[in-house]
Length: 336
Image 1: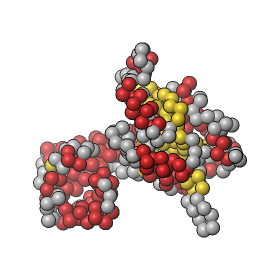
Image 2: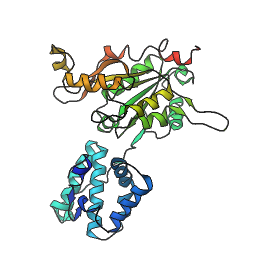
Image 3: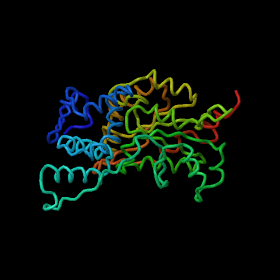
Image 4: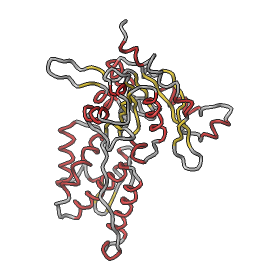
């Protein structure tokens, strides 16, 4: 089993009697279902797979054929993997063991839970009870908080849009994200932290950084400045970028766009002791390439623990990023 990867590699997947390589040629109901979904949506391979993951296991559950159950188990495996949490990965291995290693799972005592599915896109806050899939739901929750001042609930308060990686959230490796949100609120700014499970962050930017249009009222921008904590290009990540699409999304917002870097190729100690400073590969991927989207003022905001590999927030780096509410974010509300 291999995922996620290039479509050519993904087609090498085989689980029991299920083989992805045969789907394009097969006349089975499963293959026809997948082709129909792709024709209707015109989606890319990745987007098509994500849509299938949400619907196909529910359909296949009621099909008695072994191939259908093997296909369902593969889709469930993908759901476990994309969930990313330690519980999901544990249950992923237990499910495979129960279905394919120990044939009689009941006798072997292999028990597992269904995958916990997280939104592919949404809004996050470290104190929120859940991830939000609508900006209105998030703002209603935020304004109902009892632990913040009325100034932060003011619709005219500076609002900083943060762009996050979903992987860090579902795995709990989010110390640098939590620190950024706390620092912003201490400075008097409202955080609006969006995330995506894919590599196209323009989608949640377009969806969540705008107030939806209502009858007689045009949509307006909710954020005053945008800070990407992914460290990569807005569309495409490190491997392949779509700068025109990113620029189009950011131009319509017309707000300052900054990229803050987490250390990726070095531990904190390696970075501090290096004569070069930031690793040259990271300079190219996370400073030079994001600048093609229009990113400004790159700064390192988090390190990486040498023992665990988990993120460590740099408090001194969080102070100037983003600008204090009295300067940067309020420019958007100032007359020319």
